[in-house]
Length: 225
Image 1 (cartoon, one colour):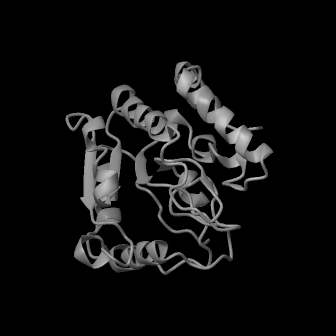
Image 2 (cartoon, rainbow, N blue to C red; image 1 turned 135 degrees about the horizontal axis):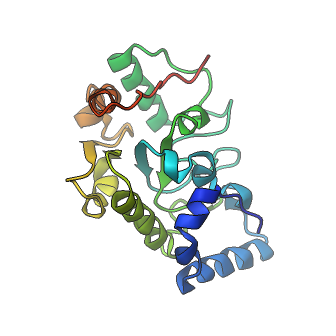
């Protein structure tokens, strides 16, 4: 398994990678691949969110649950899919909220890579999935790792905006020091809950207002140049 991960993350998480449970995750994935199981995202992209948004640069964290489980979707970022794939319903509502609150027209692509390059960390709590089987890797130990990642961000950084969409993401709130960081909570953007709290929440606008108040550059949420 060849993986890519940016140097500042590798340094900050080096002890975590040496723990037994991480070695067990690696062994599990290697065995699954050897048994001809299809795993998403591609192994080189499992840590893509870490590779694209260095630890030292993170300003905003958006937390998802697990990767998309159909071909040509999972990239290693939460909510994002490869260009020109079918628009996922949750991402459609994310675009609706951007248009309502910031007058940003929907993108022609569903790829959120541009956000990661503006220091938005798009983290899934579970980093892999077997093809066609949602949440199939929810019990292999990934949440232990990503919980540690969230707590590390909380402990070692200040003034990060955490966007917690839905009950699953909000269950991670206890890992975040509220005295050092900002937490914006809404319902999940899926069609089943978006109308309850996500749509018209102004979460993107409020994120930028917070960043302005603490003298950080606002996020340019546009995805098309």
